[in-house]
Every structure is written in structure tokens, then in C-alpha cells.
Figure 1 (cartoon, one colour):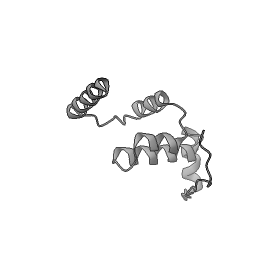
Figure 2 (cartoon, one colour; figure 1 turned 135 degrees about the horizontal axis):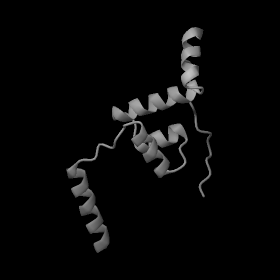
Figure 3 (cartoon, one colour; figure 1 turned 120 degrees about the horizontal axis):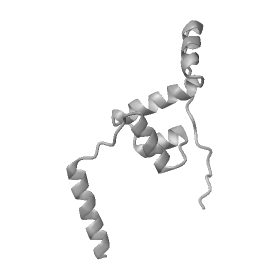
Length: 98
């Protein structure tokens, strides 16, 4: 097991929300900071700014299956083309021949 020698640095952001708007939002989404972080991560993922691994890390999602479910529920599908599939098949073939 690898030990971290340095503590990972974390950026914190503050979003000013007027109290009346926050109350209205909180009625629908009790954990506003979590929902804001999820929205931020999803948009960054959709725009190709971050990877699936980075979404998982950012949101502290424990498993790949949980990440896939979250992305599916959020309509944030993997940009996986037929060309990507063909490349994956070729890579598998090459690794099996080793």
C-alpha cells in the first residue's frame, strides 16, 4: 500500500445565494453544497474537462458501478464510439497474444 507523503491540496469555493433563493432550493435539495458539486462535476465531465476517474474522486464515489449509475441517472453518457470499441477489441487481442 502506498503512503501519501504530502497532504492533497483541496480548493474550496463559496457560492453566494440569496437567502430566499437558498430556502426555495433547500426545499427541493436539502444538501445544496453536494448538489452544486455534482452539477459542477457533471458539467466538467460533459465538456471533456475532467475524466470519469476525476468525477469519481471529486464526488468521493466508492465504486465504478456507483459512478456508472450516477452518470446514467444524470444523463451523462460516456462518449464511446464504434472506433473506440474497435480499438479496445484490438488491445484485448494483443494482450491475449502476449
